[in-house]
Length: 280
Image (tube, rainbow, N blue to C red; front, side, top):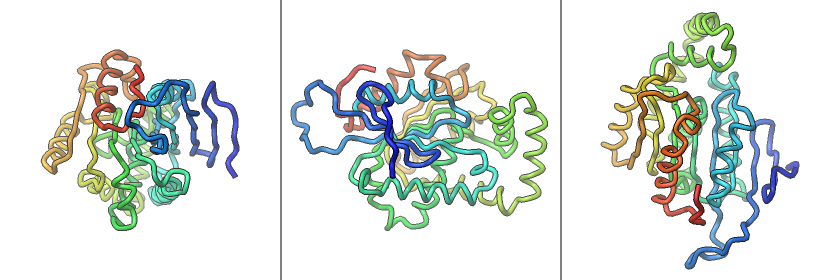
């Protein structure tokens, strides 16, 4: 059973599990644009936050999408799902079950993944790639995907990200222990990562994509990111990107608010799923 509680004015919270929460954005009082049928399913944002994200921070993004007419399904990641990828795959399967449940099965889906959230969405992609026929409907319903500060590069970068996000006071120690752990359990970790990265590069989701990243992000190899973006474009995927020389990992909105919102708004309008022409 879903639990329900008041989130804020016009928004109701449905707790699906410990880490999956549905924020139902009650219909706004403003009139519906001409030509949009009343029965048209409201678009759903699949929001995958960064590790250790705080409610106050994620609420800012939720509010952006609430004002634009989306409901929000927030899927949080746990470090255990990264350290033991089989658990990440199991979690990805549960998220897919939710997205295919009666409540969401006919809705267009927009994905917005931050940092490790991109890894979590990658686990969904692994399942979709394994059984394209089963998930064909869902793949077609994904109208766009946004990657904000995607962790990109070597295993060492992943270990660095783990230290920065989980135990920042012991970042160096956590990095060394993580590298030892990955080497010791290579078949259970590194081999899974390698396969997931290959699936991500050859993503079964070919909807338009938007990337936010920066050159001074220690968790992202900007050159590797641009190589992958070029590869996606060669496959016919429409990709928009914004790279800053200096910004903040998973906080580009805070560092460059006006530009970030302008680019995001333009991207959303291009998808033709935004039910309201609301200003961000």
